[in-house]
Length: 491
Image (tube, rainbow, N blue to C red; front, side, top):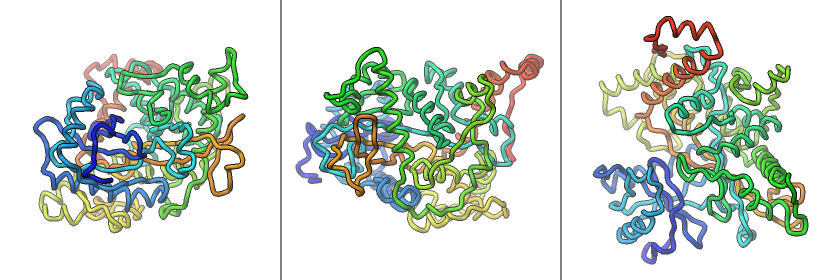
């Protein structure tokens, strides 16, 4: 990228989160990612450079080990002309959702991250001239806590995502509950996976987006702005799944096309990916935890139909969902078991503040940092070293719980397909595909107290407002003592 020839007119608004904003190039398959700050809270340029370099290093030296070389695109830090950044900021301001404008794009440091545009195919450039479909899924946490530190039994039965849905709807974050349950997607059972993906398509929230040639055609632009018309989506998808010589029509057209999409997504999620260093890491077996969530609409439907056995085929060890789950399960103690260790670390750092740098809480995120993650012991020996290791593992696990999986698909002809090119088949078409992982910024150490409090809020709300309605004993308990507040005690 030639910094001297940067033209803001060649870039367009691509999207943003709480802490960063992304613009994409109109011709080249790259994006720029800028940090955002609250007004008058800008940081010094060298601090921003260090922050961005930490993000790059964490992807390169840590997350790449879990997912594999091909699937983690950590990019590079670039320095841009300040005039270009300021003009770009003015150009895209009108396209930003109003709810995101409480923070400003960093226009003072000139630093940004340059990354591949993951809404495009990353593997095979020969299909770049063809239409490209990209599905972004944020799968969330795929297991139920198995830790003995969990104080409320409901956490061993209902997953965090399903409980959190009720609190989010109550707070006005979303208008409707989603039927999606991460444990269905991570089950490896195709029927459950199909149900999970259908649920995501019905209520995408911010867990599913679909792009066509880099443009968002389905999903949330913002919290309340949802493009969720299945008929409109089917119109976009029809040329991909039913080419002109094999059009599908009639009242079942939309449903048929959506089923094709769900089948293709399922097969790509279950496909083997490249080997990675963490592939043989012996994490706690998934069998120790429950393989289904009692709140899942799929499991409730089975119970209504008199079936009590939930099928969980298990994920193929080489697939990306398995690797994602493996990284998530570094959270072996649950936040209830982790929080006392966080307090131990805090107390130690108060006494010995110089140890903060040697502990690598703020980086560098290098090979040595990764090696420390391999200690999977759960027996607390009372040392600061044990506490530091568990805290860092928890941060990595939380990162994996909030990552996104990007699946890019492009139609290919039969004579173009070979053993070297991953291909997924639909009824009347075939696709070359690439799979990537993004949103891999390490979760902040400082967010651990917030996570502890949030966990308590989610569980307490669910117990009082959801489970209690189905349980007359619980209902009477709350009626007897309206001031009663269930709290998660420190262990």
